[in-house]
Length: 171
Image 1 (tube, rainbow, N blue to C red):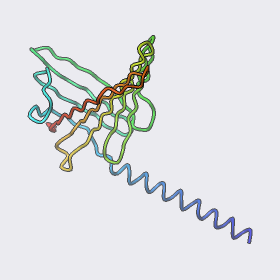
Image 2 (image 1 turned 30 degrees about the vertical axis):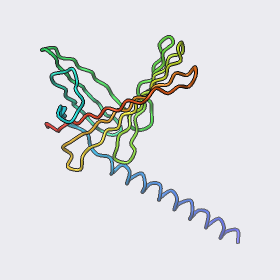
Image 3 (image 1 turned 60 degrees about the horizontal axis):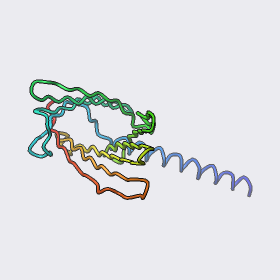
Image 4 (image 1 turned 135 degrees about the vertical axis):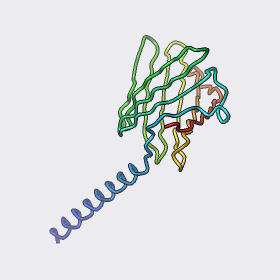
């Protein structure tokens, strides 16, 4: 009887491990490749100050490198960032009374980037959540940014701001 119970326990444990591995494999297959050059579609996005806005993404799981290029009146601005989708925080920093934590992860086929910014003096917290979603034809990348703020002294939530940017693949 004891051998049967041990055998049953081993069988159940092994089944659970295989099921988890299958789920992780299916989840990874649902993750789209975001690599490419993406140009902002101004007709489907909020007005921005730049004349041109481009994303260059190099995506090799778990690393995603994003170069944002914008230009205005002949001046070019470039912002480069590297993110990791394997659960590690990619940009924690603390400077005086300010603190920032950035974390990126997959939720199905949507890339989620959370940025928490806090100050201790006035106790203002700002949480920015970005959702990056690739269209089925892989030619459109939509970046939805939701910003929420909270004043910690009285836990007042300042209404959230939602911005949606649509990019078209150029290469």
